[in-house]
Image (cartoon, rainbow, N blue to C red; front, side, top):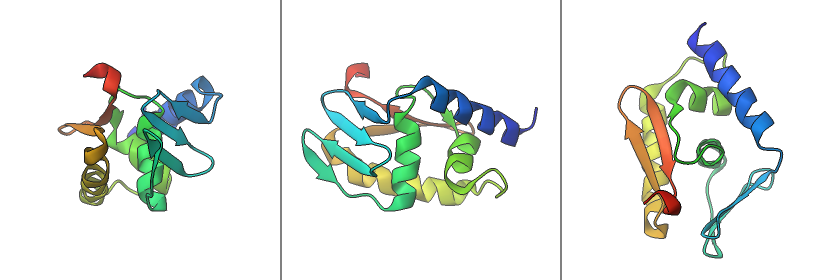
Length: 120
């Protein structure tokens, strides 16, 4: 199975496992269809691409999402992975979300995961 096929399969599983389009753990609220993110009631403005990356991470909190799956969920499976570009977007997200106690963890050469409050 190719990396692209694996990324698409992960994306399909994620979408089918989450019928609700809202993630809310009491600290973080993400409304996927409305491009809305808030921590403790404070809205966080994210550009579209950053939101889409974050939204994908939120759909499977505390679990690694491969770089390929993240890339495919934002840019589509037909565009080849650009790890450097993805890393820049993750860096920007970390800078914006860190002050709210949100952390994105890196597993080198594999992917990223959102660390939730409950996992700390």
